[in-house]
Length: 35
Image (cartoon, rainbow, N blue to C red; front, top):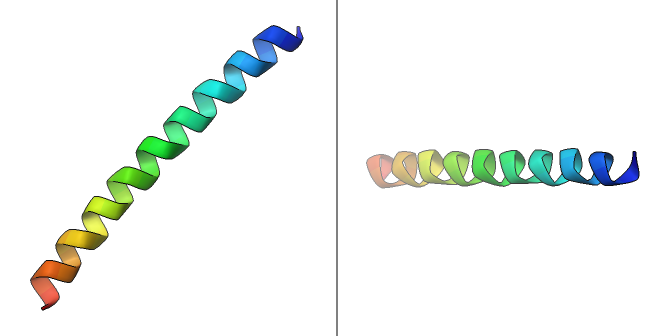
């Protein structure tokens, strides 16, 4: 049970990190376009 929960948490964290990276890229591009 605990191991499965940890696995789900790890997957969630990976998805979160990828989302943040994508967001950072979008914000960077907007910054370049604005300047």
